Image 1 (cartoon, helix red, strand yellow):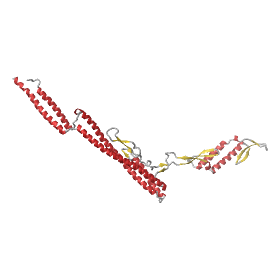
Image 2 (cartoon, one colour; image 1 turned 180 degrees about the vertical axis):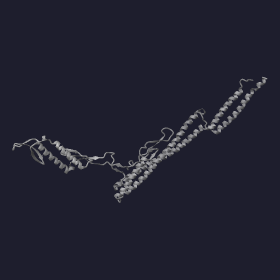
Image 3 (tube, rainbow, N blue to C red; image 1 turned 135 degrees about the horizontal axis):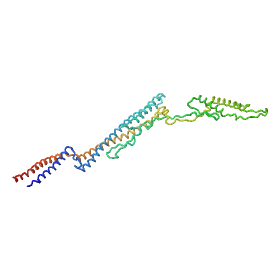
Image 4 (cartoon, rainbow, N blue to C red; image 1 turned 90 degrees about the horizontal axis):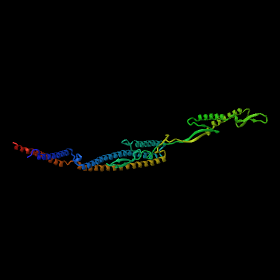
Length: 394
């Protein structure tokens, strides 16, 4: 009999410790609902489970992305439905305007409505948005919808421009052309025409400049002394009104000639001004504004028939785009159904790895609870077993 080492009590205590640890783990699993609460519970299972969790959450968000894509398509398709309504009305107006029972005032009224409808097509294309992104102005191209939990699992979406220009009904600035006066020319002399000033003002300015030029150009040195063989005198000649006249001095000849030339210039420019005006062909610069011409017009039978053709082509373009969007929407609806199905089945697989089987774990908990009570009882008995030593010491 020994008292230093109570091996029976030690064994009972060790077994009780094991049972208590197992009981604590069972209690943790039962309270949390998870079979794996830490990596030590199942290292391989934890790794697989976390990978599955990543897939599940990615699939759920991809499903939301696809739903957002459906909402975007429905927004664009709703706007195109209104564009179809506008085009149908424009077709009706074009057919009405093609009838030659209409007077010009009737066709003007039809043109006014066609212009308003064209402007509305442009407004719809510029203002239809989803999450602050324009859908119908031609900039929504090569966009990607992430419809998978992994990289590069996407569906592309593009929407063509649906404004009046793209549909063949656009309006344009008409570049006007014409002739612009540039100068007034008379016998080698030139005056720069100021287009913004009145013709009378340009005429007076031109005559004044020509007179000044004549005065500056004609010098006394241009008149040479002439010798009269009959009288033996010196004279200077100048042509005045087509006649050659004699003058005593070069200055006198110059003055007479200059005065006559000024009178002739004034008379010629005054009486036949347009003859001396030089012009050049002009055209408005690009983007300078001016008259706006709409593509849909019913000014006459020919224009109305052209408009009918244009509007029918536009209807076909909108129909083609709506058809493409409808097909993509159907595809996305199948994508959502598939993503939800995969997410559900992956969640089921992850549950089998991660979740606690409550019935099985309750059996373990009950077993460990009974073993703990038995261990406590045996530990008490083992501690009492050494009490017999005291009888030997009496």
